[in-house]
Amino acid sequence: MHARSARLLHLTIALLSLASLAPAADLSLPATDEGLPGEGPIVRDEWFQKLWLNKRTTWAKAIEKDQHAVVFLGDSITQGWGDNMKGAFGELKVANRGISGDTTRGVLIRLQQDVLSLNPKAIVMLIGTNDIGRGAEPETVAANLKLILAAMKKHDAKMPIVLCAVMPSAANKSRPKDKITKLNALYANAIWGDRQITYVDTWTLFADENGDAIKAEFPDLLHPNDIGYTKWAAAVQPVLATLGLVETGPDDFKIEEGFESLFNGRDLTGWIIKANAKPGTEIKPTPHGKPARPVFTEDIDLAGKTSSPDGRYVAVNGRLVVTTPIEGRRFQQVWTTREFPNDFILKLEFRATPNADSGVFLRKPQLQCRDYLLAGPYNKLTKYKQGDWNELVVTVKGGVAHCTCNGEVLEAEFKLPETGPIGLEGDRGQMEYRRIRVKVVK
Image 1 (tube, helix red, strand yellow):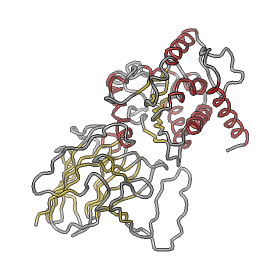
Image 2 (spheres, helix red, strand yellow; image 1 turned 90 degrees about the vertical axis):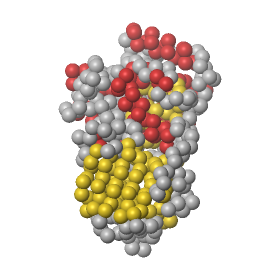
Image 3 (spheres, helix red, strand yellow; image 1 turned 60 degrees about the vertical axis):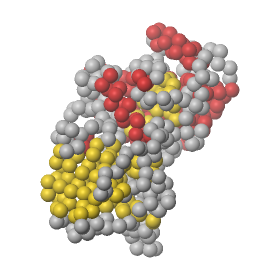
Image 4 (cartoon, helix red, strand yellow; image 1 turned 120 degrees about the vertical axis):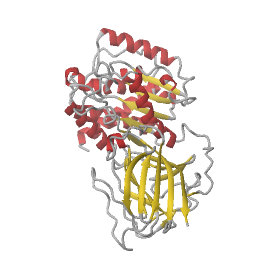
């Protein structure tokens, strides 16, 4: 970090800390930029100033009521989701802190009073499109994001932060693809290696083949409709579930006669991380921005553990989760402790965050298991349910596997070796597996 950037970061955190101690009598937008944190546009249109004051005055009266909520923070896209996010997350206590027209610098100004004063259980943030729309360069916006994240982390070093990629729009909205994709790349770089922050790819989720918003989901090419909000909720839901904030009840699934479970739903018993290097191999850190390929010099038996040592594989409420890698991409596998030399039927269900990439190893070869419609290779499926649970069925006979997703054929004749374990790979995004079971045919 450059010296000037470091000084700016420390100054901003100090200002935000002082703001937490000052009385919140005046919630109006400051008249000038003097002494304000960050750089770039601050909206001062008359309509915005009225909205800003109205929203913040209302929220100031709800600080006690909204303590320990999951806070959704952003601009009009967040504001338009409604006070309770249209009930998308059930009984989860939420607080919507979106202001239409706001920018990253506006968020910096109001962060302490509107958000951190609530001592959130988690923060879900989407911000930056209005900065681009008002002419800010991606580098300026990303620098503001770093200040926002630093203040959040200073407030609570364990509070989960979910950062959503800036959604696509259109050039005629002053938000061209190249500016947004550059900003999202800078966002991803800003959180590289940070375990407190989970990145959700809400750009790829909504972009058309030209990188613009889709009118069926964003009628004005900027704001989502009900279809768009439903997709956004489905993108965030699995991350909140892995954080233990939603879907906390037991899975009441009953296994079919003749099948046996490969995952008990409570811990990782029956699974191992295999050694992939000789003892004494030097373990080098992953270069910034490069996919990680972790080195293990000995097998790691995960029996009785709810998490792999690095937290990449975790057991959460009946789900075996391959978590979002802190490096953006991380190639890694877990394997069953047993091998399967006989014919068998494997059944499981999986749920992917947007553009997630994983895989199921069958003895040794990998069957791609991804967010198929975005990540491929089976992107023409008609029964795949994006953001929801999908069933994978693999029937192995005589060294050949017939593989389906929700009844649609993925591979009709997938050749396998004579024996081997079953494995689950991780690459990018989050993938969840549940109800993993096998029926061995003697």
